[in-house]
Length: 159
Picture 1 (cartoon, rainbow, N blue to C red):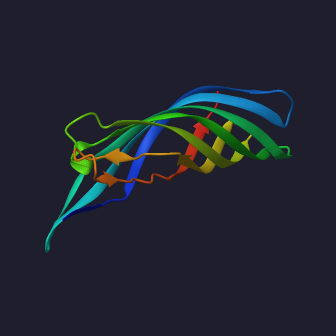
Picture 2: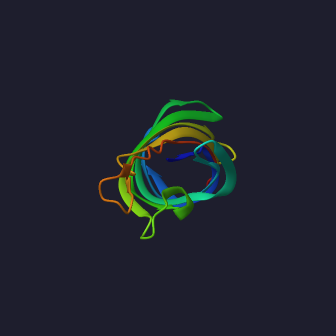
Picture 3: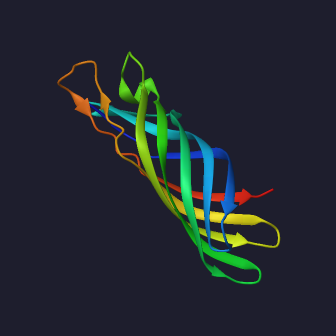
């Protein structure tokens, strides 16, 4: 029996636009791309090997509702709630598939935002929750469910 365990760490970038209707409520639209790396543990009977590889890449197109609930002279605190489609490209070493490893799902995200208003810098900590990242083996009766919750810490500079 083959068993794969992995935890991924990655780096990414985003490009987008935000607009505030007033000082507290706004919208943000962006494209987010992440490259995730992990150590995959392959186990066969009693022998296990760990291999470091690019495990999956994802691209998401999101629209977020922004709410700054505290506006001070130098800082703003807020939250972001959003939704959008996510395209995930899995590495074949994880899925053991011979066909396409592209999976599409809706992703929901929630984040806490801290904005330093004078320098237009922000820090954000959040989580992305995809609705489904199910991968199907070549055998149609065997399925592997991969639950991908992406916790992230993002530093942003605004122009």
